[in-house]
Picture (cartoon, rainbow, N blue to C red):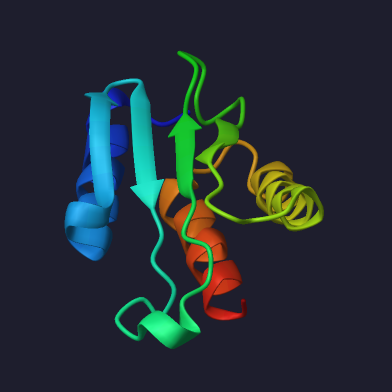
Length: 115
């Protein structure tokens, strides 16, 4: 089982990688908002959806995977939202009992690169 210090270090790692795109609402247990921008965000003619994803953990994290939701979809249709949530939840189940916030953010980031 991970201790509080390890989880806090993991939250710091997510912040270091995603900077202003990651809002930490609570450090322990972690509750993060991750705003993903597609690679085309600066080219208005090529812009695609950029949802705001929410990751939050229970007191038993990492033994229990974090809750994951999309709280703003900005044009992301329901099918794509479900596909994204399924891929994130599958990864979370695969990593149960491991610190996984960085890995889950990576899954989200890769999904937006492929859009």
